[in-house]
Image 1: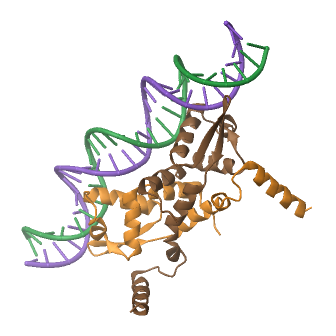
Image 2 (image 1 turned 180 degrees about the vertical axis):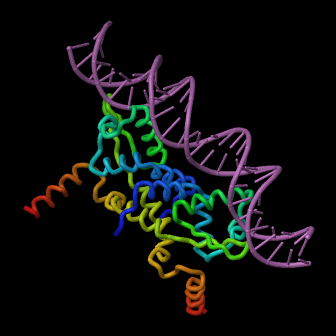
Image 3 (image 1 turned 90 degrees about the vertical axis):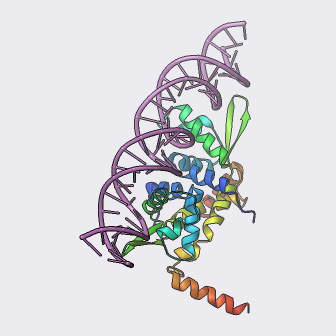
Length: 116
Length: 116
DNA sequence: ATTTTATTTAACCATTTGGTTAAATGTTAA
DNA sequence: TTAACATTTAACCAAATGGTTAAATAAAAT
């Protein structure tokens, strides 16, 4: 369970904060593809696509392999694992067990009693 | 299982893409607190903190309740649930079952055979 | 060898972001 | 009712983001 650095989380969450980039990851989930294939659904110039790709690469979410003149893009999901891991700490909150301070403190007190 | 809108995911991931804001959520996990208490650990002006708070609010991650002249900040983790749900689609990838196109297609073919 | 194809880099632009200081707002305390 | 406190709004700034077009690079096809 290796925790991601703050900068790594910054890059991962920032990469995910754009619908085009999330959609690109969705496409790559169906399988590797070239940059042009990846670009096809978007009404956007190739340089714009190229820039999105670089954001995804810097976040470690995509790798490119040169195959002649085409570059194959491959999904790398590991940063998503780290990001999910970070969020897991909040699961108890969205599941409703600890939606206020009182309950959390009560829980901490109980844990404190067990270990003493 | 209500899926979040693209704009909601944009705002959530963008809010999480900053270490100060993630740290603020961490603080709120320990319990509600005032804006000043929330601001205390950061070498940053109050207006800067106020802006971070508004980003968290627009993402639905924090709510503020007026209590006289102080405003109490409360963690709202629901958007984290939605974001995690979005990421879950990729779990099979980071767990390594589908790290390439061939394996995914094979799996899809198997599923296709079951249902026919 | 030349042209076409795939993709990136460069230069530019408008908007957003993350910060600042100074002023405004609203509430409590003297 | 005046002063202090908690917080926000306004105005500003520099850097980052997401897009553009035009030019560069590199491999493949003719």
